[in-house]
Image (cartoon, rainbow, N blue to C red; front, side, top):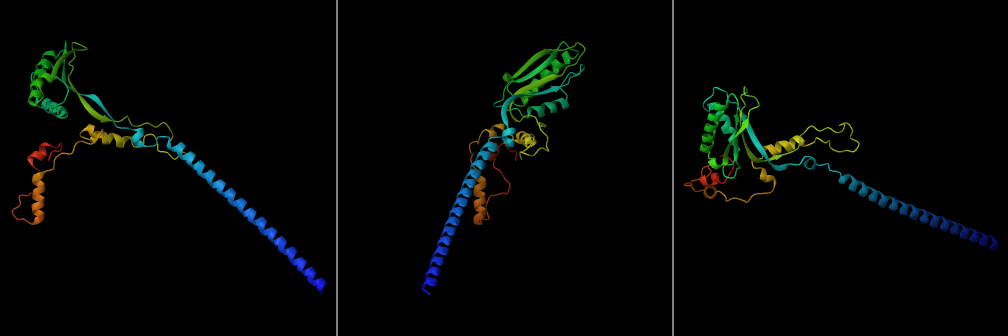
Length: 259
């Protein structure tokens, strides 16, 4: 009886020892798996970070691909002159007025009037150029900023136009319509080269003062008359001078918008 008990105890001890070894092996295996998983996650993060840096270094912003550039260019127009013309016509005056509408009489550069010489309309062009200079002075352009020059006609039988030009600061972008790659090739998940070009061109053309792209201007004074009228109306005063939509004369002189 005692021998059977002793053998049973030995067997139980052996089973417990085997179970402990099995659990220890499982714990070690689980620890190894967790360690490998941690290394894989860390390596994945490093690869993702490396790919992010590589892709981020490639310019994919339409403002970078199609930047708005502020530069000085020459604004010019050609007005045809017949050999029998003697005076500046009403249509020519209207066209010239529209062309000079973008000229800054206070800070603008010289206005150059190129008159053809040695042509069939030389006399007519000279007379009309004189009318044009008087028209410009009436528009507020100082006489010392108007330069009348002559250029040689390519043929004595031709009737070249009078060319008027002046420098102007303009905002512009590069030409649109560049398709260096196939639009269906989207493996890199990037925007095509022409994306945003028309938007940038339209934005550059719509801004009245191109220098606004360079930075904000100084804040002007508020319309004090309008402000006091609004406060009086808020207080419920019946004798308020406030008129909706009214802009004071001082406010009009400080704004580029035509009210």
